[in-house]
Length: 145
Image (cartoon, rainbow, N blue to C red):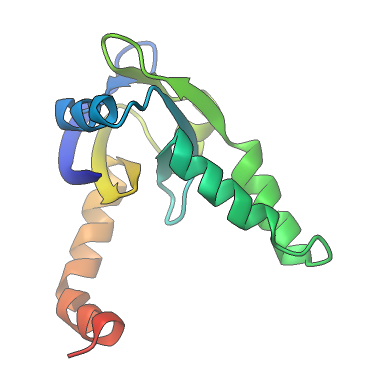
């Protein structure tokens, strides 16, 4: 799975190179196809194909009669794009996803187990600095003692 935090810069074509460790994990698991979409907290989510299919199945099962489910699915899936990992491991971020995530050039790519998140560097630093003071209390509430 995907773990770690890596600083990167987009090139002039809005591409970045997936961290070598993530490429290695993808290769070991036979992953060549990813899905990139709008994430939560104003970041982007990058899912390997198998994990994307799990997410898709779960979200597809949400009731069509729920306006919140419809709204969520529209925004989540309309932003999705297939990304095939090439030999050099570059990933193109479409302009509408860059805009959503507030990305200019500097990004932080983080592994969150089954997915990868792509953050504008400034947003990641803000999120991290606001979240780290509560890290232990959050762990206690979520995991227990």
